[in-house]
Structure formats: C-alpha cells, structure tokens
Length: 167
Image (cartoon, rainbow, N blue to C red; front, top):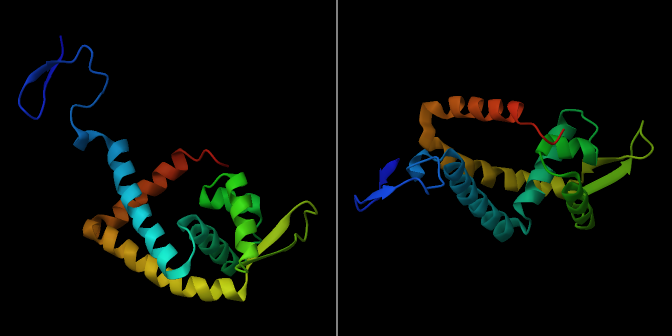
C-alpha cells in the first residue's frame, strides 16, 4: 500500500490518491501553467493599459512585423503556424487589427485564395513602443535565470520542435 505525508505530517493512504506527484514543486505542467499565467496576465494588463491591445494582438502584430522585416510573405495560415495560434483565432484577430488600422491585407502574389498580411505605418508606430515595454517585462521575468536563460530557451525550443501540433 502506497503512503505519503501531507503538510501536517499526517500519513495518508495513496491507493485512492490520483496524482503521480507527491509535491506541487515536482508537477512540471502545473508550475509551467502558473508561471505562464502570471507572465501573460502582466503582459495583458500592460498592453491594454498602454496601447489598448491584447497580448494576442501583440503576438500577431509582432510576429507579422518580424516576418515582414525578414522578407517573408505572411498569410494567415503562415502566421498561425509561426505564432502557434489556431487559424480561426488568427483570422478573427487579424480582422480586428485591420479594422483598427494596424494591419493591411492585399492579394497574395501566387495564391489567389490567400491574402498577404503586412503591418501598416500605424501598426509599426504602436509596435515600436510596445516592443520596448514587452522586452523590459520579459527581462524582469526571465533575468532571474541569469546565465541559465540561454539553456532555458534551448529547452523551450526543444519542446516546440518535439510537440509542434499546429503545423
């Protein structure tokens, strides 16, 4: 019979204990959820307060701008795969951002069914300010890792490569 001790040092029978972990500190998924939720919530608040956009809007704008700068013809499908956001979600939010004047869409050069997405001048002006704030916040959150930050990024990249389910 499996046993564990709770925070009051009481011994409990684990035969009906459904968790594979005996401590929240060893539950990687829960820890990851907590830190990403805290990080996303703070970004969302700052972006709404300073720029009137959501974090998802920022991700779509910044991803589009990054890809535009690197000479990539961006479609909603490409943007969805790049940002790891569902296609329908990208579609709805690209339309909102176009209505706000931050994104422009034009006919794709090769695919007549697709539209090319670019950042408007208004979108560039917003992003130049927002990027500074988001990078400050990222540094605040991730500088705690100090010299291990690069290793952390490499591990995240490995996870993305292994679990790429949207493309």
